Length: 485
Ligand code: F0G
Image 1 (cartoon, rainbow, N blue to C red):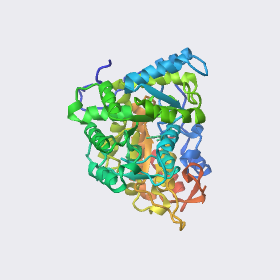
Image 2 (image 1 turned 90 degrees about the horizontal axis):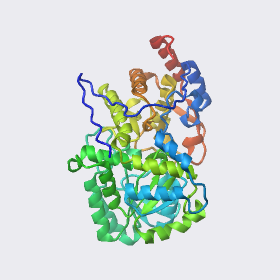
Image 3 (image 1 turned 30 degrees about the vertical axis):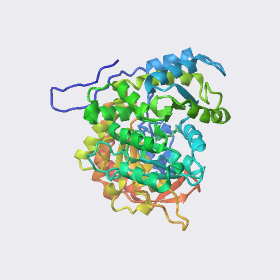
């Protein structure tokens, strides 16, 4: 077992050190700002429509973009190509047992496929599903069979600036109230999302998970964990919950999973591969779900994944027990968040998993929410730096029946930090350009749609600037940076 990666410094400044070396590289391109403006306009100011050909640092997501280890890549050569009974699957099954302590594993092609199967099997019309916070695909898969999500987070969860170590906790009283109001028969599952994505990658505590488990036991309701970012949540438990200061990540993971009835995950995150899975120790749950895997995903020993990915997933899951692996992205995020916070830039605190989240409503208070501050900030940041982030605000929301925007709770620019991908100098560049943008935030204006798809508009929608602010931003950049890229 790897030791805890504690490095102390002689000279004052504390910073994360990469505990891996780079052995395969991909050339990046940083194109001049005038071209970045042209490309942003061509992409309708939507970072989903950019080609990586024009992106310097891709911080859109950590999904499917984490770096694999040499051992993962090597394992792919050992893949046993077989439709049924593949040894690759057996190796993955052993890894799931070792890492999550779960006997049964159903492989699926990615996280949302697991959600499709779990919620289709459990949710009936008029059911309610309490959870710490939803993820976009989760909400959709609960609503399709007629269920409603109920977010029962604590008062701290949506405060962007906070010192609360566990903003992903469920409010236990609210959970009891939901069950009392709707009746256990209408609550098919309670869902806890590890390192809760949409509130800024914020973890829940083991104490909270134990309490949720106790309430579930009283009512006979199964507890499901979305384990897509469970390694990072385990790391935060070790860092922030005194009881676990000297516990290994391996044991924390086993206790977390042991408190649930089933878990599901996106392997695109948890094991730095592709694919996903559903795991449980309960044979009845396994039997309830397995036919749907065969119907929608593939045979039970590959579930829509290639056997190469299954091999790499087995190795990737074991690496989740290694603190140097699961702490890498959070320690870089912490560095970026603290650097920006020290300059007064509004970022979600405490630093979480997945990425650094900038509060666009505070960054651009002069841009009304109907002109999409998070989208405008994402576009402005690409123009200023070549770095691609993701809008997580009203553009990612929908319209009300009367045609007005359903305004999002939070307007965030998410700068994802895929695991083991960026170097510290690249992270310093991100901070530098964001600090410059902060100093020049008055220049940034709003956006409006000029093409708006009816469904999931944030993926393919196109927008334009409401005033010529992007050109002004380029002029100011040239004044301040001369001939710099
Ligand atoms: N659950 C959580 C917590 C997620 O973050 C995601 C994906 C999914 C489920 C769905 O998994 O993409 O493999 O189908 N999150 C990605 C992101 C898309 O960018 O945050 P998937």
